[in-house]
Image (cartoon, rainbow, N blue to C red; front, top):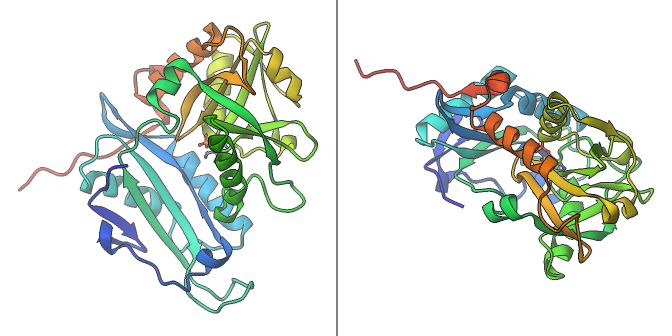
Length: 311
Ligand SMILES: Cc1ncc(COP(=O)(O)O)c(C=O)c1O
Protein backbone atom coordinates (compact mmCIF):
# COMPACT_ATOMS: atom_id res chain seq x y z
CA UNK A 1 0.00 0.00 0.00
CA UNK A 2 1.50 3.31 -1.11
CA UNK A 3 0.92 6.35 1.04
CA UNK A 4 -0.57 9.43 -0.65
CA UNK A 5 0.12 13.05 0.31
CA UNK A 6 -3.31 14.28 1.36
CA UNK A 7 -6.47 13.01 3.07
CA UNK A 8 -9.76 14.88 3.04
CA UNK A 9 -11.20 15.27 6.56
CA UNK A 10 -14.43 17.09 7.26
CA UNK A 11 -13.96 19.50 4.39
CA UNK A 12 -10.20 20.10 4.75
CA UNK A 13 -7.26 18.62 2.89
CA UNK A 14 -4.74 17.51 5.52
CA UNK A 15 -1.36 15.82 5.27
CA UNK A 16 -1.56 12.00 5.37
CA UNK A 17 0.34 11.86 8.70
CA UNK A 18 -1.87 14.52 10.29
CA UNK A 19 -5.17 12.73 9.57
CA UNK A 20 -5.88 11.73 13.17
CA UNK A 21 -8.91 11.07 15.37
CA UNK A 22 -9.45 11.25 19.12
CA UNK A 23 -9.30 7.99 21.11
CA UNK A 24 -12.87 8.59 22.25
CA UNK A 25 -14.14 8.47 18.69
CA UNK A 26 -17.40 6.56 19.08
CA UNK A 27 -16.78 4.42 15.98
CA UNK A 28 -13.50 3.19 17.46
CA UNK A 29 -15.37 1.76 20.43
CA UNK A 30 -18.58 0.49 18.86
CA UNK A 31 -17.98 0.28 15.11
CA UNK A 32 -20.50 3.04 14.43
CA UNK A 33 -19.38 4.01 10.97
CA UNK A 34 -20.12 3.22 7.35
CA UNK A 35 -17.75 3.23 4.43
CA UNK A 36 -17.16 2.58 0.78
CA UNK A 37 -14.47 1.01 -1.33
CA UNK A 38 -14.25 2.70 -4.72
CA UNK A 39 -11.64 2.62 -7.47
CA UNK A 40 -10.36 5.06 -10.04
CA UNK A 41 -8.58 3.87 -13.17
CA UNK A 42 -6.33 5.39 -15.77
CA UNK A 43 -8.35 5.66 -18.98
CA UNK A 44 -7.89 7.34 -22.34
CA UNK A 45 -10.16 10.15 -21.06
CA UNK A 46 -8.01 10.64 -17.96
CA UNK A 47 -8.29 9.18 -14.46
CA UNK A 48 -11.89 8.08 -13.91
CA UNK A 49 -13.85 6.75 -10.94
CA UNK A 50 -15.90 3.65 -11.76
CA UNK A 51 -19.59 3.84 -10.78
CA UNK A 52 -18.85 6.76 -8.50
CA UNK A 53 -22.46 7.82 -8.00
CA UNK A 54 -23.53 4.26 -7.11
CA UNK A 55 -20.89 4.12 -4.38
CA UNK A 56 -21.88 7.52 -3.01
CA UNK A 57 -25.55 6.50 -3.03
CA UNK A 58 -24.73 3.30 -1.11
CA UNK A 59 -22.60 5.28 1.37
CA UNK A 60 -25.51 7.59 2.13
CA UNK A 61 -27.96 4.67 2.36
CA UNK A 62 -25.65 2.84 4.78
CA UNK A 63 -25.35 6.03 6.86
CA UNK A 64 -29.12 6.44 6.92
CA UNK A 65 -29.59 2.87 8.13
CA UNK A 66 -27.41 3.71 11.13
CA UNK A 67 -29.16 7.05 11.76
CA UNK A 68 -26.30 9.22 10.59
CA UNK A 69 -26.96 12.43 8.68
CA UNK A 70 -23.95 12.99 6.46
CA UNK A 71 -22.94 16.64 7.01
CA UNK A 72 -22.10 17.05 3.31
CA UNK A 73 -24.15 16.63 0.17
CA UNK A 74 -23.53 13.77 -2.23
CA UNK A 75 -22.17 16.26 -4.73
CA UNK A 76 -19.75 17.69 -2.16
CA UNK A 77 -18.44 14.19 -1.44
CA UNK A 78 -18.10 13.52 -5.17
CA UNK A 79 -16.23 16.76 -5.82
CA UNK A 80 -14.01 16.31 -2.77
CA UNK A 81 -13.05 12.84 -4.01
CA UNK A 82 -12.21 14.05 -7.51
CA UNK A 83 -10.17 16.93 -6.12
CA UNK A 84 -8.38 14.63 -3.67
CA UNK A 85 -7.32 12.31 -6.49
CA UNK A 86 -6.12 15.26 -8.56
CA UNK A 87 -4.24 16.93 -5.67
CA UNK A 88 -2.51 13.65 -4.83
CA UNK A 89 -1.48 13.35 -8.47
CA UNK A 90 -2.80 9.78 -8.70
CA UNK A 91 -3.50 8.15 -12.05
CA UNK A 92 -5.30 5.18 -10.51
CA UNK A 93 -6.20 4.52 -6.90
CA UNK A 94 -8.44 2.94 -4.31
CA UNK A 95 -10.81 5.38 -2.59
CA UNK A 96 -12.04 4.91 0.98
CA UNK A 97 -14.70 7.35 2.22
CA UNK A 98 -15.76 6.78 5.83
CA UNK A 99 -18.72 8.39 7.61
CA UNK A 100 -18.56 7.75 11.34
CA UNK A 101 -19.60 8.81 14.80
CA UNK A 102 -16.82 10.98 16.17
CA UNK A 103 -15.73 11.84 19.70
CA UNK A 104 -18.62 12.67 21.99
CA UNK A 105 -20.55 11.15 24.87
CA UNK A 106 -19.58 7.54 25.57
CA UNK A 107 -22.17 4.82 25.80
CA UNK A 108 -24.10 2.99 23.18
CA UNK A 109 -26.55 5.75 22.32
CA UNK A 110 -24.68 7.44 19.45
CA UNK A 111 -27.03 10.16 18.32
CA UNK A 112 -25.40 12.91 20.39
CA UNK A 113 -21.97 12.26 18.85
CA UNK A 114 -20.90 14.24 15.78
CA UNK A 115 -20.91 12.62 12.37
CA UNK A 116 -17.44 12.99 10.86
CA UNK A 117 -16.28 12.17 7.36
CA UNK A 118 -12.94 11.45 5.77
CA UNK A 119 -11.84 10.28 2.36
CA UNK A 120 -8.50 8.55 1.86
CA UNK A 121 -7.00 7.51 -1.47
CA UNK A 122 -3.95 5.40 -2.21
CA UNK A 123 -2.44 3.26 -4.92
CA UNK A 124 -3.53 -0.33 -4.39
CA UNK A 125 -3.14 -3.33 -6.65
CA UNK A 126 -5.73 -6.10 -7.02
CA UNK A 127 -6.80 -7.17 -3.52
CA UNK A 128 -6.42 -10.90 -4.20
CA UNK A 129 -3.38 -10.30 -6.37
CA UNK A 130 -2.83 -9.86 -10.09
CA UNK A 131 -1.84 -13.53 -10.27
CA UNK A 132 -5.10 -14.42 -8.51
CA UNK A 133 -7.03 -12.58 -11.22
CA UNK A 134 -5.18 -14.56 -13.89
CA UNK A 135 -4.88 -18.04 -12.34
CA UNK A 136 -7.73 -17.97 -9.85
CA UNK A 137 -7.51 -18.18 -6.06
CA UNK A 138 -8.20 -20.88 -3.49
CA UNK A 139 -11.23 -20.66 -1.22
CA UNK A 140 -12.51 -22.33 1.91
CA UNK A 141 -16.05 -22.43 3.18
CA UNK A 142 -15.83 -20.63 6.48
CA UNK A 143 -17.01 -22.00 9.79
CA UNK A 144 -18.33 -18.47 10.40
CA UNK A 145 -21.77 -17.68 9.05
CA UNK A 146 -22.53 -14.33 7.42
CA UNK A 147 -24.34 -11.91 9.75
CA UNK A 148 -28.11 -12.39 9.57
CA UNK A 149 -30.91 -9.96 8.78
CA UNK A 150 -32.17 -10.31 12.34
CA UNK A 151 -28.98 -9.12 14.03
CA UNK A 152 -27.63 -6.44 11.69
CA UNK A 153 -28.32 -5.07 8.23
CA UNK A 154 -26.24 -7.14 5.78
CA UNK A 155 -27.01 -4.62 3.04
CA UNK A 156 -25.31 -1.81 4.95
CA UNK A 157 -21.58 -1.41 4.48
CA UNK A 158 -20.96 -0.66 8.14
CA UNK A 159 -17.61 -0.78 9.90
CA UNK A 160 -18.66 -2.90 12.88
CA UNK A 161 -20.22 -5.49 10.61
CA UNK A 162 -16.80 -6.27 9.17
CA UNK A 163 -15.70 -8.16 12.29
CA UNK A 164 -17.65 -10.98 10.67
CA UNK A 165 -15.50 -10.84 7.51
CA UNK A 166 -12.35 -10.36 9.58
CA UNK A 167 -12.90 -13.63 11.46
CA UNK A 168 -13.58 -15.52 8.23
CA UNK A 169 -10.54 -13.98 6.52
CA UNK A 170 -8.20 -14.88 9.38
CA UNK A 171 -9.57 -18.41 9.50
CA UNK A 172 -9.10 -18.90 5.74
CA UNK A 173 -5.58 -17.47 5.62
CA UNK A 174 -4.39 -19.36 8.70
CA UNK A 175 -5.64 -22.56 7.07
CA UNK A 176 -3.66 -21.75 3.91
CA UNK A 177 -6.47 -20.51 1.62
CA UNK A 178 -6.67 -17.16 -0.09
CA UNK A 179 -10.32 -16.38 0.61
CA UNK A 180 -13.11 -17.48 2.94
CA UNK A 181 -16.61 -18.14 1.61
CA UNK A 182 -19.39 -17.53 4.11
CA UNK A 183 -22.69 -19.36 4.19
CA UNK A 184 -25.77 -17.48 5.35
CA UNK A 185 -27.74 -18.27 8.49
CA UNK A 186 -29.69 -20.94 6.57
CA UNK A 187 -26.54 -22.66 5.34
CA UNK A 188 -26.88 -21.33 1.79
CA UNK A 189 -23.87 -19.86 -0.01
CA UNK A 190 -23.60 -16.14 0.63
CA UNK A 191 -20.35 -14.45 -0.43
CA UNK A 192 -16.62 -14.03 0.12
CA UNK A 193 -15.29 -11.89 2.96
CA UNK A 194 -15.19 -8.89 0.61
CA UNK A 195 -16.66 -10.18 -2.66
CA UNK A 196 -19.89 -11.45 -4.12
CA UNK A 197 -19.88 -14.86 -5.73
CA UNK A 198 -21.06 -16.35 -9.02
CA UNK A 199 -21.39 -20.02 -9.92
CA UNK A 200 -21.52 -21.30 -13.51
CA UNK A 201 -22.98 -24.68 -14.40
CA UNK A 202 -23.84 -25.83 -17.91
CA UNK A 203 -23.58 -22.30 -19.25
CA UNK A 204 -26.04 -20.82 -16.72
CA UNK A 205 -24.74 -18.29 -14.21
CA UNK A 206 -26.21 -18.14 -10.70
CA UNK A 207 -25.53 -15.71 -7.88
CA UNK A 208 -27.11 -15.48 -4.41
CA UNK A 209 -29.82 -12.84 -4.01
CA UNK A 210 -30.62 -10.49 -1.13
CA UNK A 211 -32.36 -13.31 0.76
CA UNK A 212 -28.89 -14.80 1.30
CA UNK A 213 -27.78 -11.76 3.36
CA UNK A 214 -25.34 -10.52 0.72
CA UNK A 215 -23.92 -7.04 0.51
CA UNK A 216 -25.44 -5.54 -2.63
CA UNK A 217 -22.15 -5.33 -4.48
CA UNK A 218 -21.74 -2.72 -7.17
CA UNK A 219 -19.28 -4.93 -9.07
CA UNK A 220 -21.91 -7.67 -8.74
CA UNK A 221 -24.35 -5.43 -10.62
CA UNK A 222 -21.72 -4.80 -13.29
CA UNK A 223 -21.05 -8.53 -13.69
CA UNK A 224 -24.79 -9.24 -13.94
CA UNK A 225 -25.22 -6.58 -16.63
CA UNK A 226 -22.18 -7.73 -18.59
CA UNK A 227 -23.17 -11.40 -18.42
CA UNK A 228 -26.68 -10.61 -19.68
CA UNK A 229 -25.34 -8.25 -22.35
CA UNK A 230 -23.13 -11.12 -23.53
CA UNK A 231 -26.25 -13.26 -23.84
CA UNK A 232 -25.81 -15.49 -20.80
CA UNK A 233 -28.71 -16.62 -18.68
CA UNK A 234 -28.13 -15.28 -15.20
CA UNK A 235 -30.32 -16.14 -12.22
CA UNK A 236 -30.34 -14.81 -8.68
CA UNK A 237 -31.19 -17.75 -6.44
CA UNK A 238 -30.18 -19.76 -3.38
CA UNK A 239 -27.02 -21.77 -3.97
CA UNK A 240 -26.18 -24.81 -1.86
CA UNK A 241 -22.66 -25.61 -0.66
CA UNK A 242 -22.61 -28.76 -2.78
CA UNK A 243 -23.13 -26.68 -5.92
CA UNK A 244 -19.73 -25.13 -5.31
CA UNK A 245 -18.19 -28.59 -5.71
CA UNK A 246 -19.97 -29.45 -8.95
CA UNK A 247 -19.65 -26.00 -10.53
CA UNK A 248 -17.91 -25.66 -13.89
CA UNK A 249 -16.62 -22.24 -12.91
CA UNK A 250 -16.83 -19.87 -9.94
CA UNK A 251 -15.79 -16.25 -9.79
CA UNK A 252 -15.99 -13.46 -7.26
CA UNK A 253 -16.51 -9.73 -7.73
CA UNK A 254 -15.64 -6.76 -5.56
CA UNK A 255 -14.23 -3.29 -6.00
CA UNK A 256 -11.01 -4.31 -4.28
CA UNK A 257 -10.72 -7.79 -5.83
CA UNK A 258 -12.28 -6.75 -9.18
CA UNK A 259 -13.25 -10.00 -10.94
CA UNK A 260 -11.25 -12.86 -9.49
CA UNK A 261 -11.86 -16.50 -10.44
CA UNK A 262 -11.87 -19.27 -7.82
CA UNK A 263 -9.74 -22.20 -8.95
CA UNK A 264 -10.18 -24.41 -5.90
CA UNK A 265 -12.78 -24.70 -3.14
CA UNK A 266 -12.23 -26.77 -0.02
CA UNK A 267 -9.23 -28.49 -1.66
CA UNK A 268 -11.26 -29.53 -4.69
CA UNK A 269 -10.63 -28.10 -8.16
CA UNK A 270 -13.35 -25.85 -9.55
CA UNK A 271 -14.04 -27.33 -12.99
CA UNK A 272 -10.66 -27.93 -14.60
CA UNK A 273 -8.91 -26.14 -11.73
CA UNK A 274 -8.32 -23.02 -13.79
CA UNK A 275 -10.51 -20.08 -14.84
CA UNK A 276 -13.04 -21.22 -17.44
CA UNK A 277 -14.22 -19.58 -20.67
CA UNK A 278 -17.35 -17.90 -19.31
CA UNK A 279 -15.42 -16.34 -16.45
CA UNK A 280 -12.73 -15.17 -18.84
CA UNK A 281 -15.22 -13.62 -21.23
CA UNK A 282 -17.01 -11.68 -18.48
CA UNK A 283 -13.70 -10.74 -16.83
CA UNK A 284 -12.34 -9.31 -20.08
CA UNK A 285 -15.37 -7.10 -20.63
CA UNK A 286 -15.36 -6.11 -16.95
CA UNK A 287 -11.70 -5.04 -17.21
CA UNK A 288 -12.50 -3.11 -20.39
CA UNK A 289 -15.34 -1.32 -18.58
CA UNK A 290 -13.10 -0.42 -15.62
CA UNK A 291 -10.36 0.95 -17.85
CA UNK A 292 -12.66 2.87 -20.18
CA UNK A 293 -12.11 0.57 -23.16
CA UNK A 294 -15.77 -0.44 -23.47
CA UNK A 295 -17.85 2.28 -25.14
CA UNK A 296 -21.06 0.58 -23.97
CA UNK A 297 -20.17 1.17 -20.31
CA UNK A 298 -18.32 4.49 -20.70
CA UNK A 299 -21.16 6.30 -18.89
CA UNK A 300 -20.11 4.47 -15.69
CA UNK A 301 -16.91 6.51 -15.47
CA UNK A 302 -16.66 9.78 -13.58
CA UNK A 303 -13.60 11.51 -15.05
CA UNK A 304 -11.35 13.51 -12.72
CA UNK A 305 -11.20 17.03 -14.20
CA UNK A 306 -7.77 18.09 -15.39
CA UNK A 307 -6.28 20.92 -13.29
CA UNK A 308 -6.96 24.39 -14.72
CA UNK A 309 -3.99 25.69 -16.76
CA UNK A 310 -1.77 28.16 -14.93
CA UNK A 311 -2.69 31.80 -15.76
C1 LIG B 1 -18.80 -8.26 2.34
C2 LIG B 1 -18.70 -7.75 0.95
N1 LIG B 1 -19.42 -8.32 -0.02
C3 LIG B 1 -19.34 -7.90 -1.29
C4 LIG B 1 -18.52 -6.86 -1.66
C5 LIG B 1 -18.48 -6.37 -3.08
O1 LIG B 1 -19.05 -5.13 -3.18
P1 LIG B 1 -18.61 -4.07 -4.28
O2 LIG B 1 -18.66 -4.79 -5.57
O3 LIG B 1 -19.62 -3.00 -4.19
O4 LIG B 1 -17.25 -3.62 -3.93
C6 LIG B 1 -17.74 -6.22 -0.67
C7 LIG B 1 -16.86 -5.10 -1.01
O5 LIG B 1 -17.24 -3.97 -0.90
C8 LIG B 1 -17.84 -6.67 0.65
O6 LIG B 1 -17.12 -6.09 1.61
